[in-house]
Image (cartoon, rainbow, N blue to C red; front, side):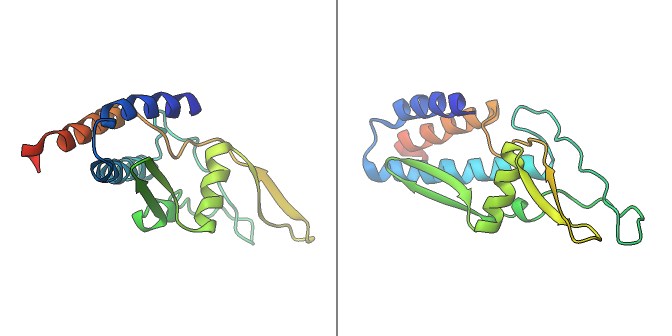
Length: 158
């Protein structure tokens, strides 16, 4: 993913290098909004940026040992209000707006170990989550960046 970001940064940076700082900040914010919307749609559809489906959620049991209904994954992370866009003339950052959303996103993005509860004997249950890429760039996102840069460069489109 880091290669994706550096390649994308260099490519988009060349497009907007000729703009004034105010125009670059507006373009960065519009790009951030579009990327947030695209990534939230992928999260809601349980799909990685490359188009592969997420690994399904494991079944959970209630206190009596019966299987619980499978709920939707990432309910909180699918809301736009939980993602902050920080944009200026130097770039754009899309990140979770709270520490709770940040932790859930990081655990799933990188496949980390996290506590899921306690056993009946009081032991803490820790589980390694499968890696699910919540944020990333797809081919459609690159085209979106081209469209946004084109809108900002064309004075008649405003």
